[in-house]
Length: 308
Picture (cartoon, one colour):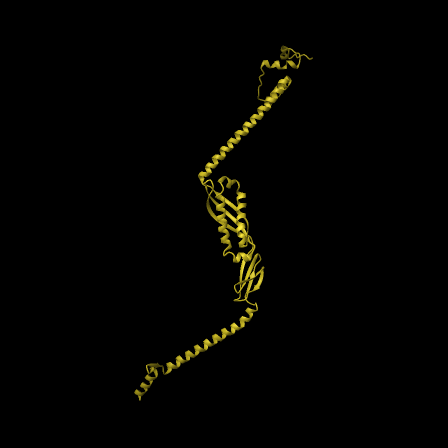
């Protein structure tokens, strides 16, 4: 009996083979059957829940009750419906239809665009390095969104190439002296080409011009020589005017001896302003006083000056 029971237990655990097919029998077969039933039930519930969730959310999405999109002040949004432009919306809060609409938000404020440093060869073959900055703003959202892929990169490259081309037609002296005119001309050229992109270029300014050290020394020497020449011209013109004035004064004084004497007295007065000065008057100077009155030289120096 023990052997029979062992054989039955063995058969209950071993698989049954019929026509080369293995069939599980015994407790193991019942266990696998329970797991498969639970898996099928879980998948059925999952599918039913997804279907119900879809049926619940689709009506709200079609009615415009989807996620909220906020367009801040200073921005505009292009709304695409099924991939096609539908409208341009101002700042505010909007509901987006899921799977139907797409919002592309652009800033309409003035943007600052730094142009990378670039080396430019001027008309007189001088190599300079320039730093510039460009100010622009978007005025047409539709053109800025669909006519150009990246408006910022396109504007930067256009400004850089236009500045290099225009400065190549100017000499170094023109670049340094007419910087305002050059930047104004570059701004006009860039703005003309960016109209089709919906972009308005406000201004382009050259921040810095770096010149080689050797050229700086040469320019300094030239400027110093020009300053010295101008100084000599000014001094010569001043001497010419002074000589002309002296000649006119001498002519006037020669016609009036008394004026010469008064001028002499004024000179003595200016010299006597210094208390430590000693004035020596030569004896011939007394001849200058003879026209002032009839008196004798000996009496004048003795202190007895007759009155007329």
